Length: 290
Image (cartoon, rainbow, N blue to C red; front, side, top):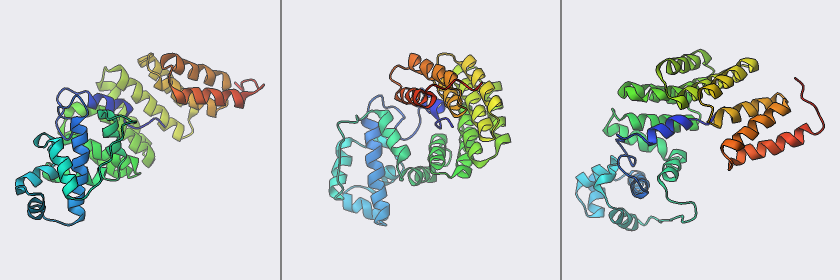
């Protein structure tokens, strides 16, 4: 199954009207770092069961400042202030200088963190109409296997912001995990009918292919991958996904061709290189059973 949100997340991260936590206006790593510090500090306040008034007294600020902290308003804080508060609370601050501090890696950290769901839930308690927090929480729900909750949050995000219709790809993948294949096909078909974006069209067909694979309809899946490639021939994703299916079906030659194409498009794609090596070992002196 394709990695969730690959196309949708890329689109969302580059939108010109970023609206909420951490991604609103930052073109560097400052806001994402502030966001993570705020997650840590606000989580500590909740863990200690302090009221906002108590936390304000301990940190030497006004209660509205704590309210802004809990709401994730990064623009209202400086790094210096947040680092100072970390010290007051006795929290350790570790900076990883090897993995980088780019916005993508910081956001990915929050996506994978166990704090993601309570963090976005807290933001939504202050602003229930925050579409971005809904889809980010939906992603976190999906990652943790809570697919029904993911479906609900994706639906709410699209209701609040009609420009987020590409999230149908994400919701379709949650439907697949729930075994609701009809709903998954419907989401993909609606996006195909609405969108002219090559990336979204390709990922819609890839997701349809995943639904067919989950039901054992491999020929239908291969047809969908062909449509995905036709929609966006310069994307490595459909070739990679189809290559994995060819490998599963022991169609060694076609698997090699697909993984080789991935490497042609993305020379540094380690996964494709590994699969190509696996296919060579698995194939040996055998001929394709086609």
